[in-house]
Image (cartoon, rainbow, N blue to C red; front, side, top):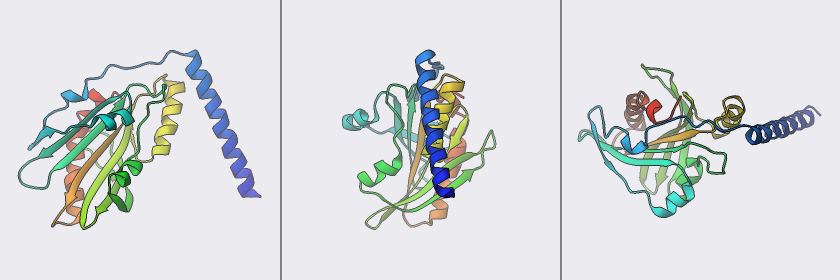
Length: 214
């Protein structure tokens, strides 16, 4: 009985929230804050230098109308870091952030371990991210990804969607982003790969507000 009541309450809440969102979207003009294009993201991060990676046309078609960057950062001392950022100035028209949960298996990489971690950032709020170990045959990679908008980082795609709805009502904004960092696990431990990605995430954290407005 308690479960049934909870379910009805949850459904009613979702319906009310969706109705409020629809009314809010129809009656207000969306605010789109200025931001620098992701193509201007620093090509050098600490001792890391980068090269741009091509995003295939069919992938861009799936991603929709947004700003995207895919880069490989290397420092010659350790395994490289691949950075992908997707930023949408507006998600009202249907273009929305795609979850790596769906993309990774489709590219042949299967998740074998999934956790949520918190990355300390000296210059600001910590980053709450997903930590995923993926495998393709005998190869392994470590993936960190999170959703960021309005100075807030969350790991859950559902929580990110909730905040998008709430902010569309409160701030008249639906802009948001997904940031993904990937590095291979070759002869080292997963913990070492995680340290590398966490350090890289902390290094780029201060630059993100220029491209993903708070």
